[in-house]
Length: 383
Ligand code: GLU
Picture 1 (cartoon, helix red, strand yellow):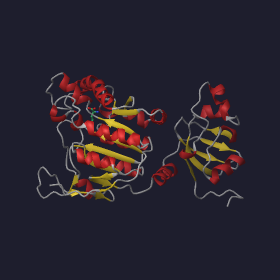
Picture 2 (picture 1 turned 60 degrees about the vertical axis):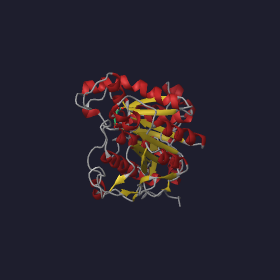
Picture 3 (picture 1 turned 90 degrees about the horizontal axis):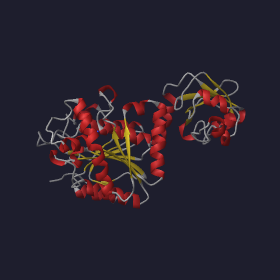
Picture 4 (picture 1 turned 90 degrees about the vertical axis):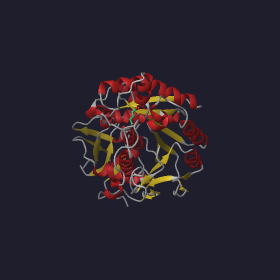
């Protein structure tokens, strides 16, 4: 009996779909298309409807283990686990390619890549480039190089970070359970499925209990943590059963049978909030009157031509303050260029960037999507 109602899926144009090991390497065996064929059909239908999908796929370790006929328990010996991930990663990608009409691109990330601002921006640019090319990026944690303290540990959390990274509208988590339940359904027959979570709370997290399947690393708890992370970035999360062909089919029709975890704020609001409140690097960028006015009006990017100076030190991807000639703080934003690079670009035209530096990260020093105006600042003459 399925007590879950069918509900409307939030509208989306770009989504991250996370597929767990229990769907790729079912019943502890090697890789099988059995469950992921329907998910691949969902991706194909989404592409046909003009949508973009980034896949976060597990299953490398499970596939590697099956190849070796190894029966070792998951996660016991890190080096063995890393070897299995290395063995299983390529077959996992091959499986997705065999089910996808679009070219599949392998993207392996570590926690370090996402913590380091420069690499974070590079990963974002690569993923956006792949989507623009019409490819299907398949992301996994780079298990072969990540040791414990560098690991994200589970692909649920990785998927939430990737959703924020690519500015997705929705995070879809496919696993072998139908939904979040009020208690562990394997132990408590009175457990009921929860169709909608308005906001994450300790009470909701308590419903999750421990880890679920034998092959993956995550349980319901990591899924809720992921939903919380995505929610903080303004992205709603849905949890559904990827083994249930009907639950996958209704997604294609813009409906959901599973759990919807709402995001407390809109995406823009969440992003601006982060830009306004996250710690900045010690350096800052000084701009002329024209650039200051353009930035204060909103919707403008900061181009090299409007820059007078870069003070102090910052790296590509650092959050910096932007000040006017009178040192009034106007805005905060992520700089695409390091302080030393900005100093070489001062007052120049964007088309000169490549010849001045020998490379270019784009025409903008700070892109308008990465800018937030300081609310208390009003320039004279600006309504
Ligand atoms: N990265 C691991 C793998 O591909 C899975 C981690 C997880 O399932 O959360 O096997």
